[in-house]
Amino acid sequence: SRFKSVDDYLASLSAATRKDIRRKLKCPTTIRCEIRHDIAGIEQEIVSLYDETRGQSGVDYGDFEKLSPAYFRAVLDKLQPNAHVMLYWLDSRLIGFNLVLLDRHRMIDKFIGLRYPVACEHSLYVRSWMENVRYCLAHGISVLQTGPTAYTTQVRYGSRLDPRWICFKHRRP
Image (cartoon, rainbow, N blue to C red):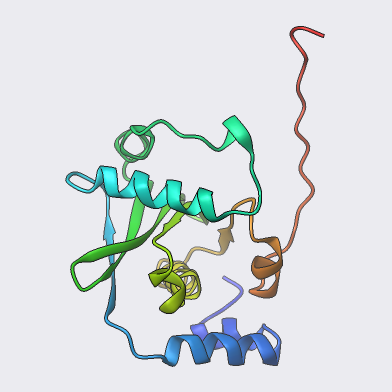
């Protein structure tokens, strides 16, 4: 891994970004992170959080971002032990999640779901980002691959943009 600790990671960021992250993490909160390999009993809440986050987005990918209500359960079932959800609880209320896919060297932060406005009030995006960083450091994972949205924030937090090509063929010109 490029970084030996959270402090090493933070040192790689600009002074303003470091200050912003530390300020947001310093605010007192009772948010608790839980890692699960299944979502039994909270499946509908996960779908609701994902849909709420899609609704907040300034970008609409149409049918490409609509998921079956069974999607999250199916991914977790079929990809064990290489998939889990990181759940974020405020007391007993689920206010966010990340679906992450794992291999020996990579964590893919595939989907996020947040409850608005409470997620913003508790800087949950930053908290979940830092939980991912901590997880990678603790498990010797050298690559944290982030999703196709929030580019500005992700680059600010140390991601780089790699070119991607999507090829398709019109079936009915």
